[in-house]
Length: 378
Image (cartoon, rainbow, N blue to C red):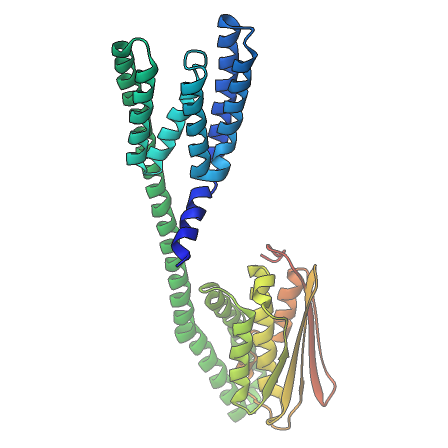
């Protein structure tokens, strides 16, 4: 029951934007200054008129801070002054009412603005000594004010339309970029990556069946493997950049991957870590998690547990992955993904540090990366 009254009150006192606040303030200053100049010429000794001019300027300057309520306060003050004190003494506060009418028209409260202008015109005509001349001047003033108001309204509507179109174009551009990245990653994976893998496997088989050619065939094994590692990194970054990067998603995907070998990934991660890191840092740390998990998949003991720790302070993020080394390893080198050496080079290029060691029973991978919106490696 109270929702609608409270909403009405909220809208009534909702402050206007900074542009309106500045406009009201400038009008208040200009009106007060010119009113002082006019009063100095006509009635320089009437201190009450100076007080009223200052009061009107202050109320007009404050009005946008309390929204429609401030407008009503100024209008009531103007009407009170106009009726009870100095309809002939203060000339310019009427322009404050005109400003409010223009603002109402811009804000699409045209009916209220027209009603305000007509009411003020009737008031001015009623208290005027020459009603005919006053009616003519009021009609001219209403026409000018409404013309200015609707002109600004058209310009404002066009600006808002352009802003909306620009936002839509930016969104469509981002979607197109993400789609292109995703399609490129798929094509690279389905064509070049598979061809490199096939070439390396055929070369390994050739070296196994013809040991005398092993030395000559060795480049045909290592070169495709190195190229594949770099290509996998490119595909991974394309996939990550095609969507919003997420450490939490990288951990979930790595957990699912390790589950295929009955390896449980236990992670100790700060809550809402994605909201505490810039995009570039998330991309690199996600790459670390995926590559470290790939290393666990390759060397880990089936049925064991892997540990992932992520610590965060003001300037850097620290990561560690550890796991037990199994007896039956996955021999295909293409499970190595990007490769720990290449990952280390990538992290160091971005100003971080990385180390990895095998103790015979356990693999430990450590990395520390600076938190920076634009890493040095990019």
